[in-house]
Length: 194
Image (cartoon, rainbow, N blue to C red; front, side, top):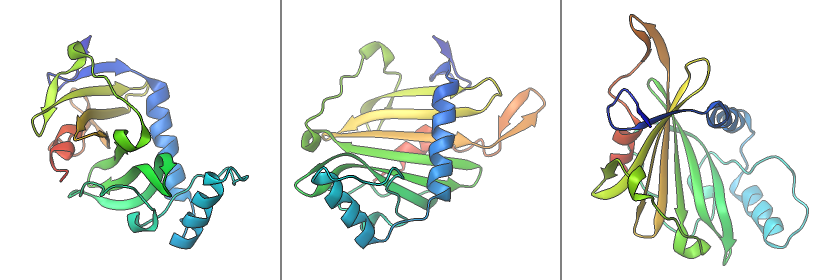
């Protein structure tokens, strides 16, 4: 596996992952956010297997979603949208995905309560290349054919699966594409979660 420019993250070409992140980001930015009542009504329909619209459930405020755990506090960035993930157990979602606008890029913070959802996550020891708050973590950098990149850090803490994705704005530098804000990375954002 090749190393990314940070010296420890794995680097991989994955146009599909990069494209998927930006497609989801555009949906979150362009979607008319639902109110708390609309979000609740949609969750109720999903829980009872009734037909629901194909547009994703996106809200502008995390409190508009019934989440079965207290999501981690995010210190950096302006929240531009949140969407539930996982399943609905006892009327609450088992996961949440939040998108933030940062100086120099965008980030996504995903959290899933593995115990509540009945899921498991096995971390391959060979893939572990860093840590977040003392927990083993996997850090990867994905690029596409145009040089667009995503940085991603994945770890488990106390039964919750976390994934922080950072999409930096890139500038053409002397030696190729450079981050607009080199002081920010997926790992630095992950270590700020509380």
